[in-house]
Image 1: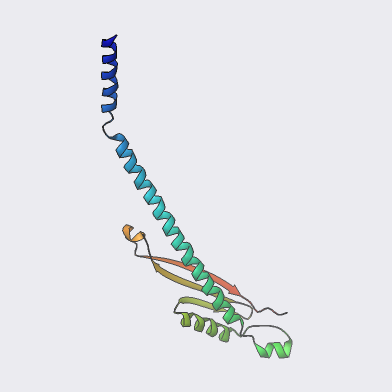
Image 2 (image 1 turned 180 degrees about the vertical axis):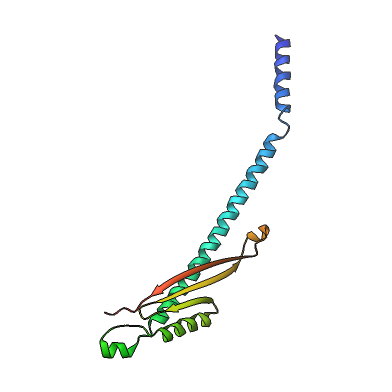
Length: 145
C-alpha cells in the first residue's frame, strides 16, 4: 500500500512540475489584452469628446449665421430669407473668435458649418499617430414664430 501511495505522489508531483509556467504566460497575455482594450476605450472616449466639441461649435456658428436675415425680402415680400453673404461672414467670424477652423456654406434658406477639430492622442502616439482629427457638421435655418 505504501508503494502505491509513493507512486501516486510521484505521478502527481510530475504533473505539477510539467506545468512549466504556462499559467504565468497566460496571465501576462490576459494583462496585455486588458490593457489594449482599456486603451481602445480611452481613445474612443477622446474621439467622442472631440466630435461632440466640433459639433457643438458648428451648431453655434450655424445659429450665429442664421441670425442674419435679409430684411429687404422680409419687408417687401414678407418672406424670411437669409442674407447669404452676411450669414457666411457671421459664422466665419464666430469660428475665428473661437480659434477653430471650418467651412461655412450659406444659402438664402440655411447655413451649414463643418468644423474640424484636431486633438493630441492619448495612447495612439504609441502606434505612430500623434493627433486625432474629427469633424462636426451642423445646419441652421431662420425660424419665425
